[in-house]
Length: 257
Ligand SMILES: Nc1ncnc2c1ncn2[C@@H]1O[C@H](COP(=O)(O)OP(=O)(O)OP(=O)(O)O)[C@@H](O)[C@H]1O
Ligand SMILES: [Mg+2]
Image (cartoon, rainbow, N blue to C red):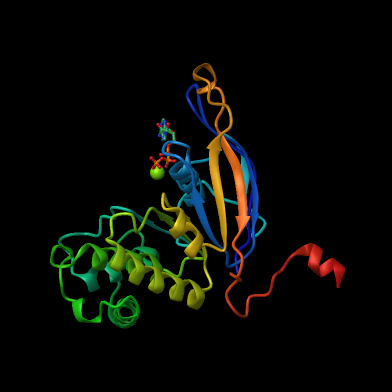
């Protein structure tokens, strides 16, 4: 299980401060919904979580270790418009996720490992409801199916942290509700920590165990560049708990026992 600590994180591009003084601690197995107005730095924050970008100041700790400044198979990502590879079938797309994790240079597995990867990929496609589409190409799948394929491709690597950047934004409401259920099931089964950026507050509260908002506190035009967004609210969602069997490993709780 993965504990994330964000300590005094700032992100500055040139003379523009995008994020300032972001602090929070995430319990293992949490489903964090990240909300806030357009341009407030949500995607920037996810890129830092992915290791694609380093904070300008401060640090992010994962299980007590400073997050390295490069992507790792421990962290998977799904974007709103995810580019699954159009010339590969659903099965090949998911297998590629595994092959790239295991053979980052060649991107191919052979023999027994390849057969095991194939079985794992088929199981993952089943779990996202795509067992009848394993040999289809992305262009032959609906938007919701493509997004489930993208989720399968990210999850096959068993990431400890899944980063979702408006992953369901392009789906129509019926399909969106269906993909929500799949996402919640996979979250419970895989015991991941999830960060999901969304513009939809009802989605944020429906899926998240906690909803964190970024926003700018100072909004006068002359202040816009010098000050970034910070955490303006941080709410635990009532009635939601961590996935079953997850001990709440709080040092305070342990000390109290
Ligand atoms: N690589 C970059 N170089 C310079 N500025 C950047 C870079 N990436 C992001 N920014 C700036 O940082 C700010 C935050 O961008 P970001 O994409 O994180 O916002 P967001 O909250 O995800 O917005 P949206 O909800 O529209 O997706 C924007 O003003 C953007 O122009
Ligand atoms: Mg964004």
